[in-house]
Image 1 (cartoon, rainbow, N blue to C red):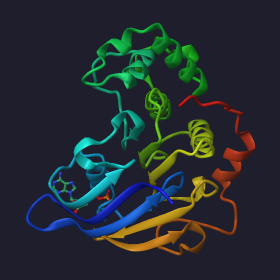
Image 2 (cartoon, protein in one colour; image 1 turned 135 degrees about the horizontal axis):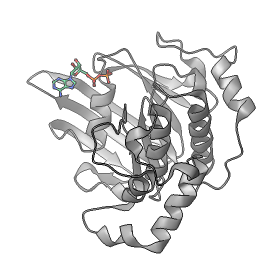
Image 3 (cartoon, rainbow, N blue to C red; image 1 turned 90 degrees about the vertical axis):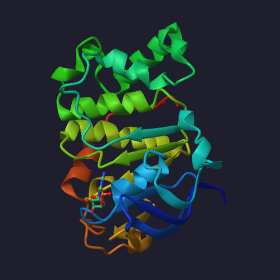
Image 4 (cartoon, helix red, strand yellow; image 1 turned 60 degrees about the vertical axis):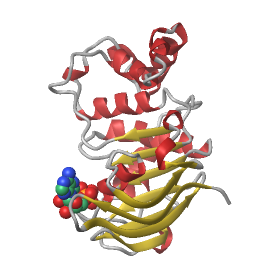
Length: 255
Ligand code: ADP
């Protein structure tokens, strides 16, 4: 079985004491993982290490068969926590989504006609077609999250990493996010999602890693997880029911 993520003896430091302490795990290609644990347990620190944002690390990380020193960013999507446009440089939704193709070496992609067409199509999929020329500074948290998802999908991603994507967003935006994740999963994309409450995405999650003080306190199937963060295997949570009941058909998310 191939692995999208392999972590071996990882320690991450902000000071002399490791915040992440000697973690080893691997995530098989195509699986959906929830990363959970109490506040301060090290979830965001781990994500940042995986993405090469926090470089004060020891140990080995491999993503999509590449070492941390040469990550294939064009195949990795990242949706950070609390994406807010307030105070940012004025930009329309279309401009923000198009910027998902920008890399240090491919500025010209931004101006391609095909880039604009893809960005418009993705904004349509996240139901922001009528707002594509509006400045994102005026968007709600849910609308901004939809822009972030569309931006991430501008790349041909094989791995999507999300940090608390459901926080502070409305049910309609949750529904759209759920459908996009479901499509990506069907297409074989590996998904790693930091979640406190896993129940709204219960039907998508294969496995759970729970962190406690920077160490793994649980790693196994979602169905076996009985941890302290919110989850409910037996009764469909109201939000999940709403998501499934009202889910519009979003077919063919382009990767
Ligand atoms: P979680 O995402 O699980 O809430 P974090 O990874 O944000 O946890 O934080 C883990 C620990 O690292 C916490 O004790 C936090 O205070 C500390 N920490 C996080 N970011 C920094 C930073 N930039 N500098 C110093 N300590 C930090």
